[in-house]
Image (cartoon, rainbow, N blue to C red; front, side, top):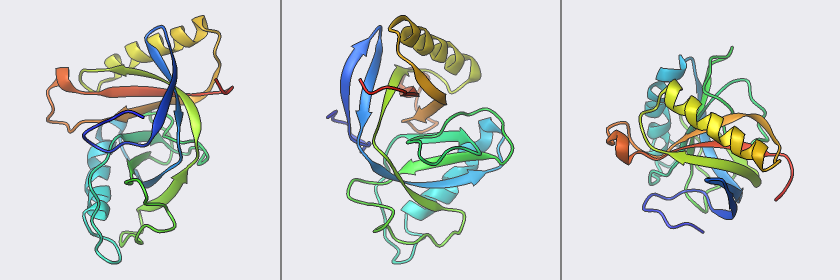
Length: 190
């Protein structure tokens, strides 16, 4: 398991292929909210809602440590997927998720006071991941998504669904120190 200063969901790197990782994620819980967007503003719209929940706006006023990543997806999406699917515009808005700390499940997490916050378990699954730095932009994300898809095609690996964009740093983190990832859900176990 990787070691990180900020807690992340547990995963195991199964193998590396052309600069990408194939990962097996364990189950984890998320707090999520749907916001109207647009895509570039969805994270900013969702942050105070989700931060309110993890910083004590819940029954019992329980506080949680911040975890990573924060993910964003257009809705509607299939809930059995482990992470959001895309950051492009779609009817219904954007789903933004905070990962809850280890040991916290949707069943034992305190009830949110804000009805917009939903709690959900994310099932174990395998994903292909490309990691990169830089600003959160359509051009930077698009460039790395193309590299990820090309590496998977070259390795004859199939995926399903749209990409999942995961952010690990605060917006004030310098561009060259940011950790961004794009995940694609693998069709066949590796």
